[in-house]
Length: 442
Image 1: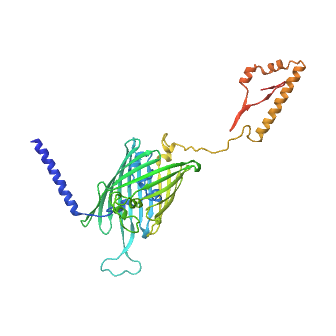
Image 2: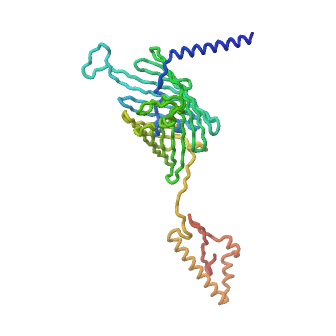
Image 3: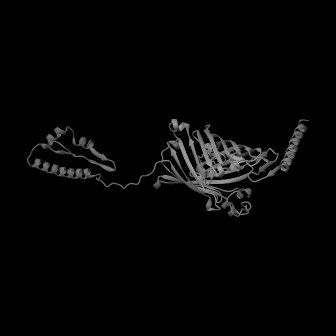
């Protein structure tokens, strides 16, 4: 009887899932970018690197597509960015991240993307005189929660959930869930993968229409090289186009406007749909950046710079060109309350001072300015005078040696064991000659 109830329950659940799947397939319309506001790049640092956000570590404004970086954070950070697009459209983004210990980090973010004071005329109303128009606002509001967990010393997991409220000509709601992995192959080479929309990216409108976008898989990589001659480090970032669907590349800047199929149909088209950037970071905190937000055209060039002030404040700027629309300027900053009031914790990267080899010419022996040369010459003359004095004393039968022993008060072995030496930076030690009343003692 219990077995019968068990199997009947399983059958009921299976039938319910089939019914829901059938209703979902008929009621929902598959579109490209159902929640496109979730794909807007908020951070100036990642934007200057061609928006290869998945590969950029330490940019906590990139939580929407890089949640696994939270696994390696050591301090709490608050971040904010502001972007002004064409026709007074603005995008504001704020995030707060904090470590929870044992390779676990939490991040929350809020964003608004929209335009205000848009003039409009209601149906049937006459044209107003002057500038006395009715105005309205349209906007998308995004709220995100991200968690990053270090699974092993080299592997990290990140999961994000995004909610979207849309206030356009009609209201709507959207949601999406993302999950990603990051694997550190070696210290300076990292591979990343993100399954965007593993819950499916769906949007429901006030009119009853329901839209969704299928899940998409992305790959990214980063590589760093130390450059001691320039006192800094050079980093390379790359993020590929979608692997599963050709629609992911139709939203890029491909002037031919063809998706070219999946990666196994045309690998070169998949590579051309990627993006990437270069970043050189000096040891004193200045960073210079450049990139391409699409490899299909050089008109998608990006550039920018960043500055870290006293380890607790990061300020970034990005310039983004566009083959059709106006260029975009983006500014962002991040602030750490802990680093503002305390020193970095021992063992963290912020507490380590990068050591660079200083290339200098090896000094010659006994060369450390004019004083060393004169000192060496005077030492040789004193040694010669000492030898002459000893010979004269011996020929005259004087007891200079005994008198010298009385004055020095030590044996020859003790004298040699305690003879004073002179040390200077970059010059080897050499004996110093001390003159007494009767002879020169070494």
